[in-house]
Image 1 (cartoon, rainbow, N blue to C red):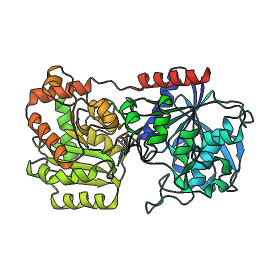
Image 2: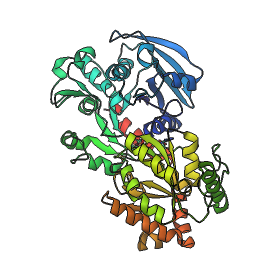
Image 3: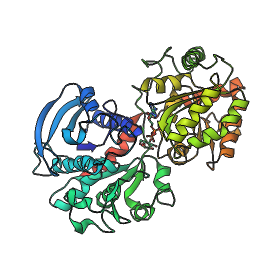
Image 4: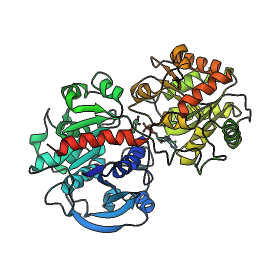
Length: 481
Ligand code: ADP
Ligand code: GLC
């Protein structure tokens, strides 16, 4: 099985969120299962630096008059990795999607158009490389034009799969962008790229891919309904027979508390003394009072309303009144950042806000926290709850998307069965959230019960193998058509 996996970020080359974790780990898992999998992404400066060794293997052209693009080849673990080198489009410092002020790069249509264009070129008989995929797997809107180009050009094509990691991000641009992208106006229609008078890269992929997946079974159902489908629910329900949900996995090489280089005290799941030492270490590092008794809630998240971060602010007075602590790591909406900063400034021994991105701090918070807060209004899969299980931190989640598929709510029955792994609530309101937190606080003080919840979480195995097999089955069905 020859597979080309296309994404706009992949850990450890470049990461802004969970897509990078998936694109870093799934191709490796597929390669371990015997697939000849190649990874394609843009050559951002930080990705080139992280890749280390690479060489130019092909010139791929200049479809937009923005500059000649070449392919640089390196290796990530077991996977041959191709970075598209086109300095006028990619060689800039900062986030892959946003400038320093947090605005979309003005030429994102071309930057990610090129990603899809190159993926399509490499999938054609006239590819500049001697290798062609049986299946082309594109992720999210940034890679979404690849199947559209294949349809525009005609001729033999590989099987095509789109994975939707978050339907809220659709890659919308003015209709005239069709011209700059070299796409025919015949594709600007309700069955093609057109979306309310603009073009949508995500809709392009939904329209022109053979198979569609998303990252949890529950989210696959949710996005066929309004408002979860963010306007694409009708189209997705028409394609229901081609849409499946495959839960993400965890890279336990990266997220393993026993071998985690970021931790003050690496530990085996279940080692309460070392867990307590990590809690004391992070409390000290963040200037919180080093109290073993105070429950420490943690957040590792983009800070926006999708993630329900306003709900965390709403219940903060209650947390403070209970003598609890909160440590937040994240960045995003300015008002939310300021909101957390302000409470931290007022209550420095109880609340810490680390605004920014830090891989090290993400690991240390998972290790030091007692509970992880994820009140997401929508959550296609979510990965931090999986990490929390392994790190002995109990997730409190809104029961939606992948959170509904991975966290078993504490109830009398689930506790008796040893199945309870966290606290789940709904609807996504501050009062329902607070009630879940109250339930958690009551059990936190019952150590034997709490240990049962921790043990059930630690026993969960969300390794990539099972999910990678499901992707392989999907690819095989396509390649054998
Ligand atoms: P999403 O992709 O929607 O942001 P996920 O839960 O799937 O949500 O993945 C988030 C990933 O990004 C996790 O690996 C998490 O540890 C990481 N992450 C989120 N915010 C930060 C941050 N501020 N610093 C470091 N890592 C972060
Ligand atoms: C998206 C989703 C998140 C998911 C991640 C990886 O960023 O918001 O829920 O875990 O992609 O699939």
